[in-house]
Image 1 (cartoon, rainbow, N blue to C red):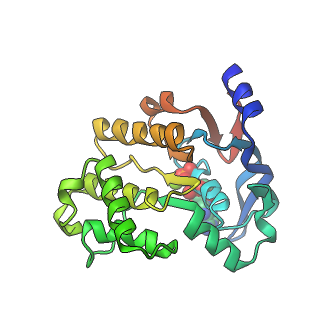
Image 2: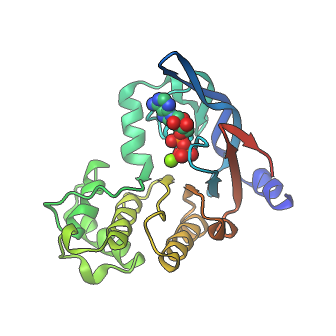
Length: 236
Ligand SMILES: Nc1ncnc2c1ncn2[C@@H]1O[C@H](COP(=O)(O)OP(=O)(O)O)[C@@H](O)[C@H]1O
Ligand SMILES: [Mg+2]
């Protein structure tokens, strides 16, 4: 715990989740997917959000990623209340400051691997062709797929496509990387390599990484663990 406290003292919080609940209407009533969650995430931290299937991990990621809104409580990003931002401001955050990696990979099938990585930078506003190309190649190298840059997504395995998706998320240099079960479809060696890559991104580039997993073998890489059970936060 000492490590957390010293991290907290040295760095400011990028994300503050304050007494957040998310209740979904369901036939015949409502379902409390998250109940009174409070978390502070210092900038540059590699956080693993763990918990069984159905514990509320994706729901919490979606709230932090501005894809959904809490029914109670507040979320602050870089000191700003997410709930008070306009849809345009949220979209800007998602494009320019957040990187998303989902369990099921969504590459654009008609673009090559490199063009896919460049595309996320274009969305974030980068127009310089040289920068696009060199940064895309740098990120593909990082995930070990530079040699496949000219390939089409359909020519890659599932695990390789996931690594391209990670390169794509990293390319625009996000401040916050939200990775929801990114290793679920990878073999254990690749899952460990991807987790190590996230660890390196946070240590070397100061990226704040929030990754969900239920793989106990990966937890050791995290600087901070948040555990959910049936929508409740478990301490420790
Ligand atoms: N839109 C929704 N409507 C109703 N229930 C939902 C909705 N989204 C999620 N849930 C429920 O909330 C709980 C948590 O879901 P989720 O956050 O996806 O869990 P996890 O990602 O940990 O597997 C689950 O029981 C799920 O069925
Ligand atoms: Mg989930």
